[in-house]
Length: 126
Image 1 (cartoon, rainbow, N blue to C red):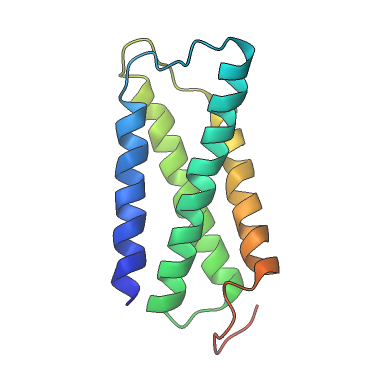
Image 2 (cartoon, rainbow, N blue to C red; image 1 turned 90 degrees about the vertical axis):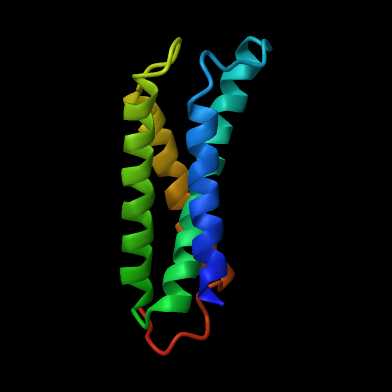
């Protein structure tokens, strides 16, 4: 059943790539557009991290801390590669600030998982 989480994570990563490929994406809502896009950044990478944590937990018998590190690091690398990718898209640019916002989403996801018990049932603890 682990393949479901890996498939979902790959699908989600492709969806992030798709949206990053849209030139000059905007809702036209001014300041609210900015807020909406930054919240979307946090959510996109929080959800990617959650899917990676679940995939790792179902595939490998590793500690929670190692799972969180691997999923968080992979999500952060993808966030950085996403910003790099945007430097090649018309009317888009790579932004270190967005990587920091993505990192906040990743951290929130890890805290959510840890406090919400999504990693319960493992043979190894942190």
